[in-house]
Length: 157
Image 1: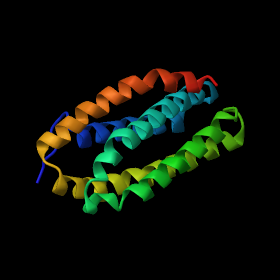
Image 2: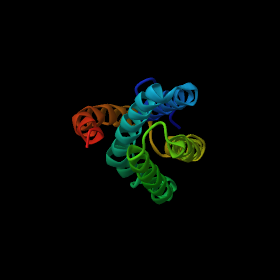
Image 3: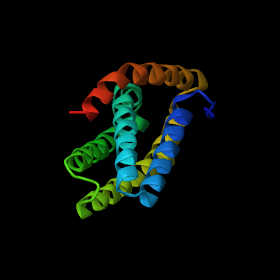
Image 4: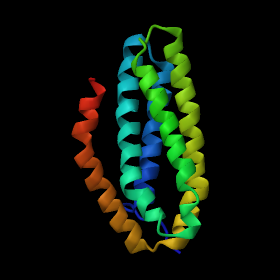
């Protein structure tokens, strides 16, 4: 059974989860101008995170019966977050709906993070060894770096 190391995919994903939680915490305290900045950071972080998971983590999970069963639900949760992100993008921070949608997004993300860290990670650790997790971590970082310019461009659309 694999134990997380600093550069394995599970610890990288966990670190990104903590980063997004921090951004949501900042958004809760923010005025309208700062709230918009927080949202842009949340949009970028979540979009990059979800796309990278879908390209690297989920295909690796597909190889094992114990982890394959979680992919469909996780992808649905990603889709739900993407829809909410796009809805928020159409709003202005001063609108009451903006904060409501941020809260809705935060709840959806919190649910996804709990599922991933409490169920999926445990199943993955039983199937993949340290070397596999480290290799996936490297691939995760490389893929994320390649996606970043496209995500930044999508933010201004």
